[in-house]
Length: 493
Ligand code: GLN
Image (tube, rainbow, N blue to C red; front, side):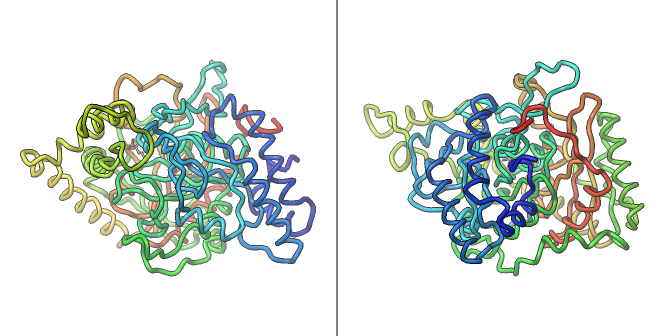
């Protein structure tokens, strides 16, 4: 077995037992990146020298008998997290050569726990997208292939497409992502990974380039539920630098994975059963419910009546916040600048040159719904519906411990598909956005393959700050599903 195939939990044991060194582990991943990244385009920046330095420090710590949660574990960091001294692009030309003078809180927490950063992972521009096709640094290839039509290049999902492709192809053992409307869970589903969006406030947003501040959630990608629990345990925690960071203790998520589901009540939201759902996704969902029942859970029907308005609400609130957050890219303070005749000309040229079409579309929608004449009709109404969506979850969770739904309405699609129709692309977020609007934790777990041999995930949604139950249910699904299929393109494959 190659070092790149190990899980984080296995690598931790191997490092402790001195079966291999942290430098060995990091070099194995850097070699894999060298071989496969030119094709997959999962990384925008590879920080080779820094990774080797950190691996050496990890080896020194291990030799001194010190091992933290992630000592020597090589990770990919979504290029939306500011990393001190390492270029951060947010997938946009407008940040140009920006090198942050500080480290985001989440990545600082990972470094504190001994992690090694391999580089910055590709993403949709400013995390706006479901395919990684909007990145100014080019699309990412999904390492999975269709059985029929094996030449089609598939998208890894988005916006955290580079993170997902890197972990699936064994270029990194785990990765950070951010999820504003599904950007961790949907790519996890498309790439056969576990992806976790924790409770809003669980992971600090400080130093994460803002998309829609009330919806942005940092979280982990990994190949197992346990690995994702280890990563989240390190990433989470109160941060006074983020006013929405919650001052609550971080439980032992890894231990929660072994709790089992005996006696838990699992809700099935009937509104998620849409007419257009592909039969194989519905079948997998029923299979997931059966597995949980066999493991001792009770399955209960619940109703989330406002779910049908989730997507419309999201695509008003998210662009509104984005238009305001992205006002700061004016060519004066950060990144790229396209000079002009006067100040106004400089703003216009810089923003016209620096932002791609999807980002421009969002800024236009956002400024429209926030404008004096339309604020009440759109933005205010969306906020009211958002409150009702939250209430739906509160009511449902009065009777159940967690919910089970599909993660996405399809498996990975091909590059170029859905591109001509933004609404079709937005439909990808149908099942994921409600959890962002409500701020409740949710995970995607790979449970099977479709007829084309592509991975499909199921989504577990939990109560606010009850990630432990989300991990317990996710681990039970993982165990029952025994998902062991491998992507066509991977290190050592
Ligand atoms: N696909 C959604 C969007 O385009 C979600 C993106 C995200 O979660 N960052 O906004």
